[in-house]
Amino acid sequence: MAEQDEAWVARLTPLAGIGVARLLGMPLGLDVWERHPGSLVVAAPESRLAELERRRLATVERWATLEQYQAQMAQRSTGNET
Image (cartoon, rainbow, N blue to C red; front, side, top):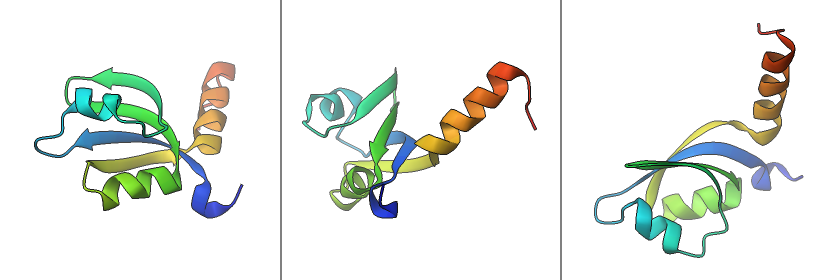
């Protein structure tokens, strides 16, 4: 996968006037993992996250690439946390 379109696990916090429900109603192509009152946890390509920021729909807090996240979860499940 090209670095630009690398998938990320991220927290989206809608900007004022947008709201979580409105983000969920938009055809953004996000893989929503968790919904919270003021944010969403999603997996999405970098290009989608950048588009959300460009359109000023949400602030994006990138936690880890999907590959890094999966590796961390695999380590935790085997008890090999570092």
